Length: 119
Image (tube, rainbow, N blue to C red; front, side, top):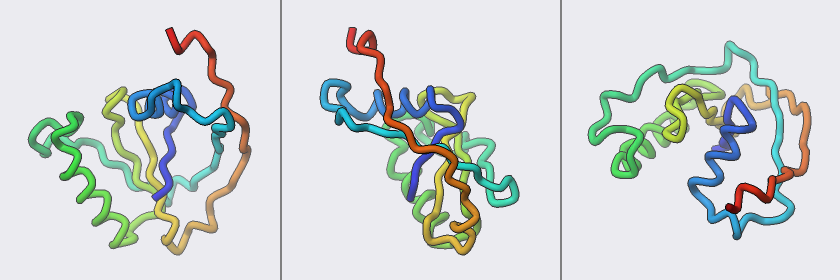
């Protein structure tokens, strides 16, 4: 699975909640891609998951949903709410999907982290 966010700022927040900032590699990069709208399946709500979907306790259930989606190959991309900012979305890409070649890679750039994030 390849993991994207709809905004670069959300990508940074997703990194910061999972990785100690002091341990980030200096050569961290980001990639901008264009995904055809017709290739994206959007999950509007995960409220059916208990315990609450945005908590760490729901991780196993979320992984099972993601694994099932990958195996079924029903869409190239799955847009899901972010647990970090619940009004924004992350986009999961299935590299084994038949439409993977439809991704358009626009830009790859080095991530330039602001040192004030360490405070």
